[in-house]
Length: 101
Ligand code: SF4
Ligand code: SF4
Image 1 (cartoon, rainbow, N blue to C red):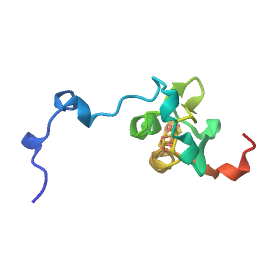
Image 2 (cartoon, helix red, strand yellow):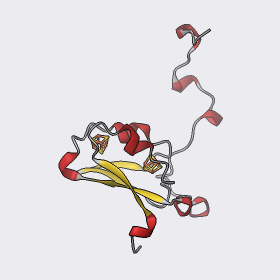
Image 3 (spheres, protein in one colour):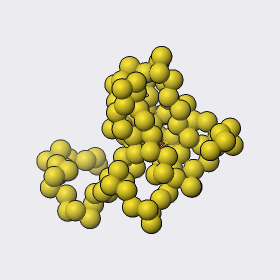
């Protein structure tokens, strides 16, 4: 038994409660970046700007910058999905302890 195509709904048809509002509309009371133990780092030379990372980030905390993805670290939880989905290996996850900020 699998998913039947005619049973799927477009995202516009989902009730509002089934979607997650973008954290880019910032809410100071709901900052989640302090959960993170690793953070995504982008290697510009390897990035083809395919934007898979931007599509797959479940927290919508990636924006499309001039040179590749930019991360909103107030909300990035360090899940690593962006690095996992990156087809070129441009994104890697680096331990938070390697950073001073
Ligand atoms: S690590 Fe997770 S939350 Fe952070 S930018 Fe990547 S996909 Fe988004
Ligand atoms: S998925 Fe990888 S190659 Fe594509 S835009 Fe993101 S960092 Fe760049």
